[in-house]
Figure 1 (cartoon, helix red, strand yellow):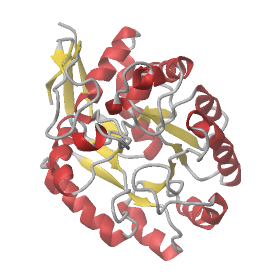
Figure 2 (cartoon, rainbow, N blue to C red):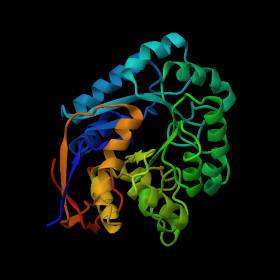
Figure 3 (cartoon, rainbow, N blue to C red):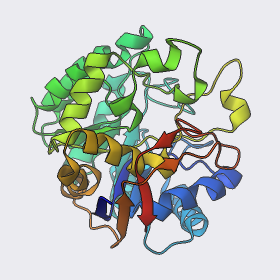
Length: 332
């Protein structure tokens, strides 16, 4: 039986929600990941040091494991130098959402120019900026339209570490290679599916997310970058749990839940490309270097052994529920 041991896997983009949902899903990430970058788009958002410290304690209590590190982020707003200096020891970065672009982003940035004074302070203080990079244009063009903003920010703030979150297009990879200060995360689903899987036949609400899955050539470009261990790219699952009734309804919530199956799916993808030896870099080593973090020690062993994805995890339906996949987690 083929086996693979990963050392301190990291999820560099994760939604844990709050209250009952937090308690339900945090243990599922903590079981197989040594740490995760936690998204701040709660209601109300995590936009103060006091609220951030409270949320971190809630996460640790829900996770129930000492070998899981929540890397905290603040929701982007206009911050003073004093606020950023106080927050810096407690955060891995600040997350910018364009206003209204995704779940709980109504309080996001409506005009990028107005955000630049805070970005200048972040550059001076060495605080990374993570961005949900979509415009409000036609849904398939939103990331492509936002690339001009990424370019402008990379040029205006050359010492600011900018992370293009959950990229979905081949064009984003081209831009990634142009600027030293640009980095990126990519989700499991965008390495595997296309828009055809979401809406080509019967609509599959459990594959609907923002940014939406794109064309086959985009998927192939992203998968190639991942399996060749592109040094500026790392895993960020964007695992986003919603109750089943909020997915299987009119007005379906955006988000794909992959946290408990991410490593198994990635092992299958990398195995298909004869690249299992590069999975460690994609799920851990690149992120450690990009963010200069030292995660808790954790060894996660996977085996090429069939695993049937559960129909649900509590009230949350995962990607590909009920499907048999070729890899399993056998030790963590």
